[in-house]
Length: 310
Ligand code: AMP
Ligand code: MG
Image 1: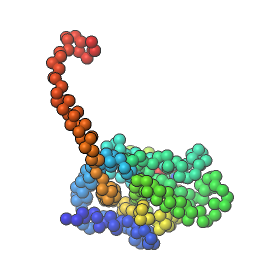
Image 2: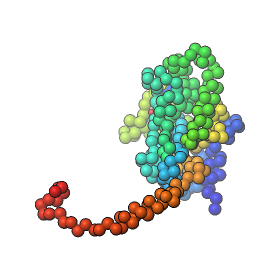
Image 3: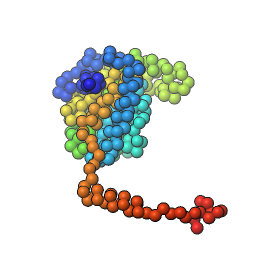
Image 4: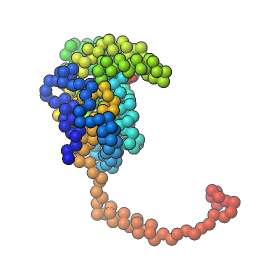
């Protein structure tokens, strides 16, 4: 039977080369009429198990790395999605990096510098919790960020965004050509759901720490952000590194969709445990033989010397 998520994954993908209308084409409240909440929970568990298997092979094969760029408006559920989706994966094979407002040192470099340093090694999954995409989102919505970047004056004209899309596409092409698979996920939360989650952060004491007054200021720029996201998708969803717009008003569905997209991406790589050569196999058998021939040591630890070396 075909995986019911397969069709959905195709629906979430921003088709490279086509123009999308973010608000018309993608519904943040979508949960697919085929899945109940319980259905989703069972599928999520399966998905988390499958991801763990893929990650094991990714690590053993040591050829590819997976970079997941996670973008969203505040309170869309980036952190909790990472926590749930990665809950079954060997922690040694996953790194999460969060990119905040750039430091003075970071501003003294080109904008990809800080991301470059944090790219996952072969065999690993790297999650960028926000990424270089902020350079065409928050920096576009707030031009004062651009002012702080020490750019050559001729670059600071309205053509800069097109340049950046092109630079990002080229950068990702370079990564993909070198075995670093690039998966880009946008958690698409509605303005109403964001409000509900913000209110919960104000009203529930154990959520107060998550709330920042600055989040309300950003909310005022909602439409400018949606425009910036839409244009970004239309320029940077490429065949080598497509964007996925994941409905984010229902967290149980978000998690299932995210794990499914990750598994579909890893599943397309043909990951396999490395096969050992005839020589290596012979060496393994020799080692086995040697261990089998070891005589059992009946040595007894003298009384009073437990745990101490003689
Ligand atoms: P959060 O992820 O909610 O903890 O917040 C991090 C903040 O850093 C967000 O408001 C981002 O918009 C901001 N940020 C991330 N990258 C950049 C960037 N390149 N330039 C300016 N602000 C950024
Ligand atoms: Mg925030």
